[in-house]
Figure 1 (cartoon, rainbow, N blue to C red):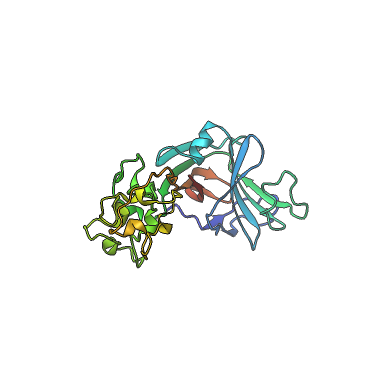
Figure 2: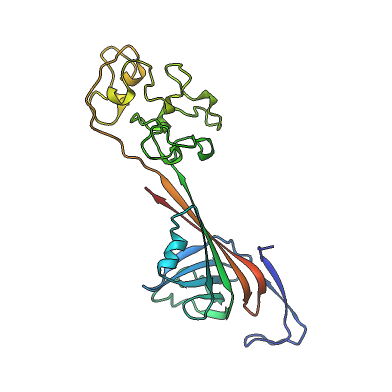
Length: 288
């Protein structure tokens, strides 16, 4: 319904660059990959665009840089829906053809001199619908869908974006939550056999000392703290229960993937008139 990859247009009158008779049929392919790129063309505006080769073409969406655009590009809730109206000035949608690759032409203050625009069609009216979403992921080896729906260690960070779910200063990824990587956590490492996997257990070896307090050299790496004569790190060896003053706490890290899906409604490019058109998706990642 929304994917206008191929449009068949019946022309009853000819544009400035074509000569034809009434009733001729022109095939126009809108076979763009729908993977959008963002650029700032000046201090006032953004452009989201898609390009293709053979022939060289582009779809460009110009919109202002303001509080509304910040809501679009960096939503603060998991889903934001924003609408704009094309107005021919600050909000514009164009289809263009070129003499060469427009990739280094669209966003440049001084465009590539070897490339020029052949044809330019602009929608004079229509509505743009931006659906902005984001998803957080701590990349800890536990898929978001399988993370505990809450905060295991009570540190104020939900498990799905906490790379140390049990708060023991050993990253979840290093506690083998999914040893064979098959997405089944039933074989998660459980050093002390208490039924609580290490990545959710703040005392992995089940001795009298919490894991995070077995960092003898207080460097944040518990794997290099071995008692004399032991082949295992203290936090995995229940025969050693020494407690140390620990000051180093590893900072939490996670990433947020933003996705902005863009639909256009009631647009008319002369070559393309449609109620619904899916322009594409702009996606980027921020690390926290």
